Length: 433
Image (cartoon, rainbow, N blue to C red):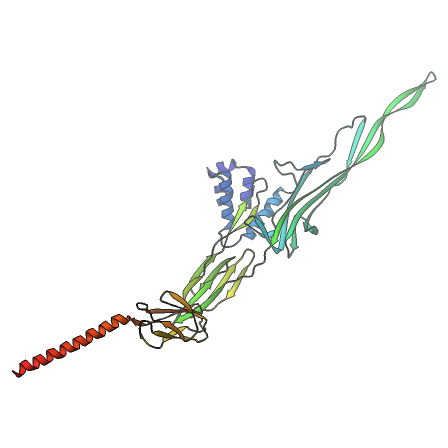
């Protein structure tokens, strides 16, 4: 059944699956009930092999084969530029490799190669020109040049041209085709071939009269704009505090790339770019690498202090490996008060260590900048004091009593003591009697 379905596929699909590294899966996609657009999306996803890394190599290999199969001749179903004997000429510049299409803007790396597709047909002149008894055409060899221009400067010729351009650039594929044809035009000539009775008898012959030169020339271009994208990886792991063999660390991923943190057997991923491939519509079904921005977030992690640590950042054009460590060697924030218990309104003298820490203190729903020796007014019911510095938090707890309640408590205690004394005296007198 699958072979019958494949026989019904358009010829271009057979070629495309020949390009694909997973040919069986490709053939199954085109034999499915998916629409043409859905088939292209499914094939592109198959070739991309995930969204973590840009599939530049897959796109390059695929596009080479597409252009190799279609270049050198007219595109099926497409009317190109014609002039004289040169017919249906076309030229196509693919996005340079590597490149990434992000939010409608094409970015290049500054160092890559460009693929150029082209084709045309030559239809020699034929037929007798009116007024001629015979017309001979002598076509000369076709002269064809396919070149790459970057900002108007030639970078080379051919279907694949390397380039370097450390700037925003306009890439142009230029096809220059020409042919010279010499046209020998023969006209009927009459001449006196014999005499009869003293009169000249005229005969005719088809003789070369003139030679004309026809120069046919087609110059066509295809261009695209690409911005230079240079990106330095920016990811880090910052140890904040340590408790025994466990380190509390802040993981800050690269906001414009994909970051993988590996600490021992633990792996943490943050994806800032979702990479994909898009497949163009016929007849030039080429691949373009696309990127969609995603949101990354910082994380505070509990990690083993002795495990090896590696940060890997995958950007649009390169992968970088950064060193990291789970060893905590920085200052440790701590808070201390001059007493443990306070009456309402009394000053809580707070000592912060280290003294030069640029900390903030939160107490009783208020936040203060905190030089060491900060005095806080004790608030009944507010016992927790929180300090923040170096990405750490430190805590201390105090007891605060309400002044009125304290006086009532003292009075109750005095009354209880007086009642106890009176009761003791009464018991002693009854015992004496």
